[in-house]
Image: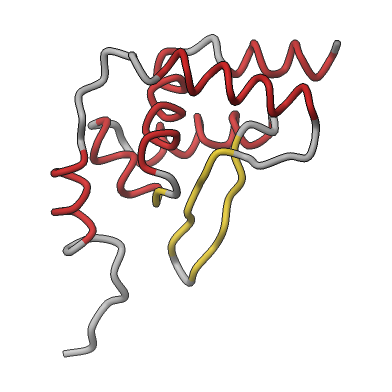
Length: 116
């Protein structure tokens, strides 16, 4: 029950639902992409991502300076059912399709700095 309570607490904030919606729709995203798409500060995005990470709903991966997040893939029936439910629920979330903005960002952001 404690794990369930942690999941529902993590899902109780609108911004965390928006983050999950982005991750479910677009797969792995960098913190900088999430902050730009949702128009929040880096600290706000990171704080809410950390909450989702601690609840076991997302996983992170470091690549140099960048941290990427994706919906956690667990081999636990309850977790799989929760993610399946969230996917079906959030596919209709009132968050606009940001695919075009994300494609534009990926060509400019989260790239290693080029030495002059």
